Image 1 (cartoon, rainbow, N blue to C red):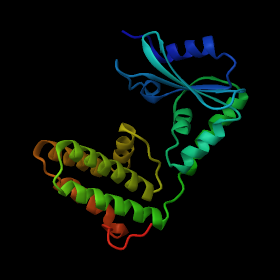
Image 2: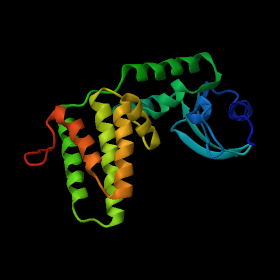
Image 3: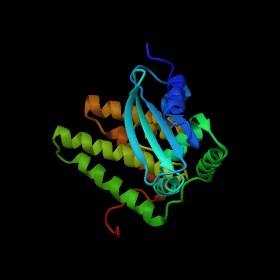
Image 4: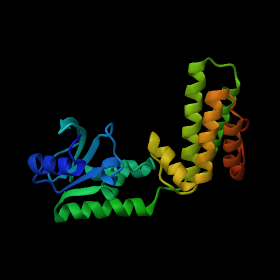
Length: 232
């Protein structure tokens, strides 16, 4: 059995980064939702340094990913996350388990929480039309004759765009991978459950009807599908 993840992370920080301003364990391990296949994600803020440094190491049986930022670099990464509506570093910092902090680190922690509370920039009408257009195109691709590989790549694009679109038009943050689906389902449990059923029906029965139904319902309040007449 692996060592306790929080104790492991604390030992690492106190051994290797004792002078850091702030260190936070993020991800499933910080929430007690980890398993034997989980890794540790730790974001570290130091006084000195330039660009962000990223390391992957092994500690007490844990694969551990370290994101090391400095006072001069972290804000640019925070701003990039805000502009992309995907504030990964703020989310890790504000929602994780604090391992070590100093007064300046507490200010960074409050800044991360403020960014999350403020929310993403609203989508413009142009942004909404771009999502409508891309979803329309990919749905048309899915109805065309595709080999199996092309089909599943197209499905992946549709479900990613759909989740992002629903979250963004409702002034919610997005994420990547499984976290995107988690945020989508948390925002609308009914739609999350339907998306699961739609994917299951598509993969098992080669039937995209439920997926198309969910996309159509999500686009309807914003004008539905868009193809002819779209301008970029």
